[in-house]
Image 1 (cartoon, rainbow, N blue to C red):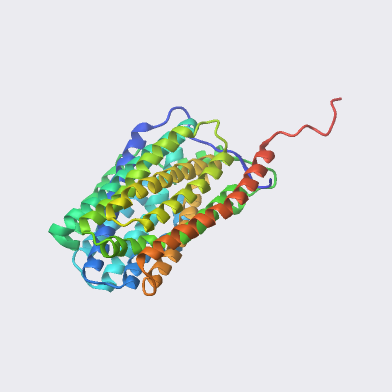
Image 2: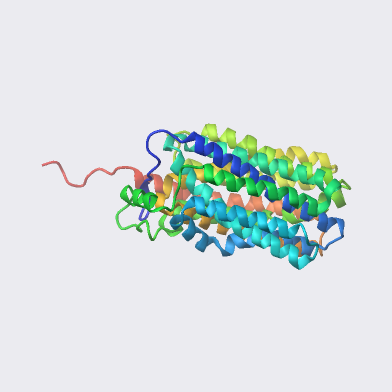
Length: 429
């Protein structure tokens, strides 16, 4: 198959577990900070009886920069010193939190969230692109699970902590606490020895580029069109995300309105998804071995998406708030597995010098799907009950994943055949 990557360069020698640990801590702190801000703001909107459209606008402002800035962010990640990017992004996020802590106006709040997310659109692919540079190929699934676990702990602690702090400090006080976490990510950036985007790292990447099939795109021109398997998987995941993302807008109304729960319960439920991600990250991290084919991982990605969608069908069927918890554990576990599989596929199949662009491209497409779902969720709340929206999203997501799974299977089969050595048509002389 034209354009399929044959091999990818990883860091030589041993994995740099010290750097992986530092990046993991930064991922944890970033997750806590982001969810303190977003959960606190969602609760504030619901507390003052904001409309579904306003809640959708808030969540869209978080996702939109990652869509719009995907291409320029990828360019920056591959060409600018990773340490500089992480330091600047952390400072911008801390500044955005300071701004959010002194305003209650809708326009100012949305602007602050936009700035916060714009910085994340740079820091997230930067950390993601650093991972294959810190881990040898055989350690990549375990390293991905390690970083994913830290991020999950942060995202798990963030909503629960926000639910507690909101009752004592309000939305503005909760955001001030988040500022500390983003400042700490700046300190972590200075502690990471592995760097990308510098002249030396660029020279190394081009000195040992990924081998590509004859006629395929060069590293400089790499894009999702260069890899059919990645292209189908990414667009397939974006389609499923579009189908189920409305749940993120509807959940606060479902839990606190339909199920008559409290802010603390909502925070705990939201954090439960992250608990599932933590469990799923390690379960899938151990099942992915050096011998595991990329085609098998691609199929598992879509199966995981179907499981997530089915968990939302179960959520829409419950009669008490705490019954959401086991549904979220299952869905979160599938989500964690998908994240590990996606990071491993990216690390295996993308040339080192293009990993920033690859991460940003994947993020832009999946976040674009999220934006569509958020818009739909805000509009649907004006015409339908939260329970029916959750049920509908789950069913639509499951059907979408099952429809795309055969396509992934065909592309994966073709990819395996393209990698299988063919007997020479010329006889031995």
